[in-house]
Length: 198
Image (cartoon, rainbow, N blue to C red):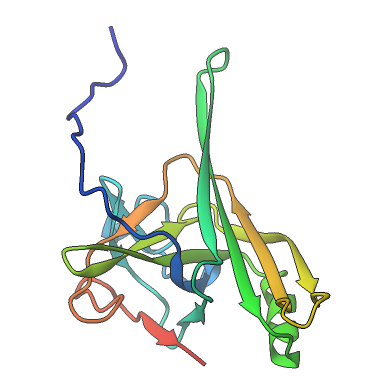
């Protein structure tokens, strides 16, 4: 007897999609409002239902911090590792964030990111029904800045800036955020979600 059952097949979809990340949003893990009465799956103030983030509750006065990324540079991956002998499976989300140009403000924020457990939302260039797809990473266990580089470049035309790598370990795959109406995170079920863009 199988433990679970499949629910559907998958045909070919449109063969023209865009890669890459447009924006990355960081939320401090402890600033999501935990409330056992709201059917939270993970206890972080983020409700996931069938692989979709259907509700986000943040503490009043707290923000998601948006980072714009140069086109064609940043990416996310999720490595799935299953073990037959122990019967376990885990999902390891990873975000590689590229930021151009050195600034003292970035230096200070990177230092803070290195000491903070975060939940990451990645707004992709891919669209569904005219809206950008947003992926949530680290909803249960958070994400950490575990490696990175500061690169000056060598030649006149080389890039200088930062490459930052955030890692996590989850029991379920990354969830897609429910479609927004006009602007990301303006969903009526989301509470106290405001965006800091500067």
